[in-house]
Length: 98
Image (cartoon, rainbow, N blue to C red; front, side):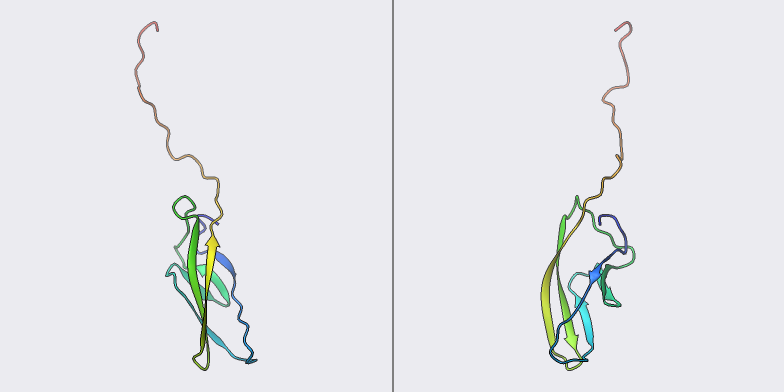
């Protein structure tokens, strides 16, 4: 969601034929982190739909044996209706009796 600092994006899961392995995760985009199996924006980070409507990133899963798998994902930013930020007026005078 746009402008949601530190937002959780979703759960990260791994499929591995070696049952019981544990994993370390990495994310190619420095605005994101994986904590407790959840992909989220780091504290103070948010996404702006008007600037970037989607984000491409790679998630790496590395098992205890050092083997890794990398997969590309696209995060689609949901637009939020934002309040106007300014009002302009082209002139501030009027002709008498007009």
